[in-house]
Image (cartoon, each protein chain N blue to C red):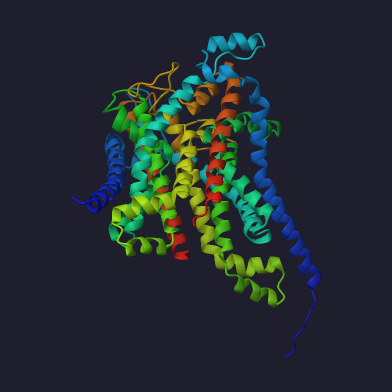
Length: 293
Length: 283
């Protein structure tokens, strides 16, 4: 038998080095868009952001056209979007946070049971449902049958269905990280089941739960598609849940469809992005600061 | 009743809402689709006609199914090299270093940007760029939509792939190194083979996200109700046709749009289920 040993280590080292550069180059390409998007929006959007931007409702297209042709900043702002977003997100949180927390705890506490595992699978499926479909659902349930017209309530129902699976999953995952010994210690002292949940499980995992809620909020704040089918949008500031309301992403969509509003859409997009991203960062910093126990 | 039993009952009842919600969604989608399927039968899926003129109404979902599948697959193809290299950077080359932490946060930020902002940015920043290359007259179309979609799904594929790559046991890699393998050889002969199914699953789940993406695609695909004729031709996806036409729809058209929604729901559920199944096998 004849074995030939060839020394090709130089070639192997070369491909090894090249591959490393490829990995670095690919990673750089991946993060370039974030700088481009943030930079683009900041440069083109900052001019319109002033006090009026937050306190005045959206201008009509005529006002915008006049201002644009005179070379001034467009009057008005996104106040009707801010109040609409606030209304719908608050309402959705009111339903989704308690329900999500309780369902998450239920799944965690009964994770050996078939039923709980089935609920968990349903939650996973629900999480994957495209948001526009939740818009259709809220349209069928609320717009057609309850408020008989586009409404803030319908919008918040679609946002609730979006939030629920996010909160359930984060709650369950947070609970799973609590050491068993803590629960055992509580039970050894004769703590009743409900006290164990309210006084131990929830406080111990509070920062994890808060992170889950904040991430869910940052997800639904930017949602547009389901709101187009449910809340529709409204030029006026309104807090009536049975009437159409606007939302910041809905305003961006309206501005986008109106050629006179171009400079306002940059500002609205900049504001929405900065708001959502800061919420995201806040959630992550809460999570990293409070690693349990 | 004692506090214990009340608590247990409350937890159980809240879990029931998920059951009711899921059942309600499926029933409502099926119920709303019945008129369209009764009128057109299976032709609704195979036909690509979309004619809302009263009297000669004719609806078929094929153009939108094609649009959705083409844009999502193209987005996935663009996404794979980016997500693959980035996950190697995070979980292998610069594992547990400061720079990998920064990269990871930047990629996470990409996932946080709202869809409508992507769409708007794509419209004003990316579209003119494509027009200037001369590849496309208007800059709208399948390719523009897929490019933005790819950027949007990269974070999902990356974070999951990175997690799975970091789970490859160090002993396996060390054994290969001790035989004299270079890093690239370790990656291709040890890391990737042992993480393969997990990496594939992460791309399937990213595909699941791309399928249902609405706003960015609606703003960039050109909204033509035909099967896209080429990479730079306009089209429409299932999600974008719903977003565009639901508001003014009624009667049979409304039912047809709900039926499109039902098909989209089934396709995404199937793709997500497949991804989750592979992940569970892996773990």
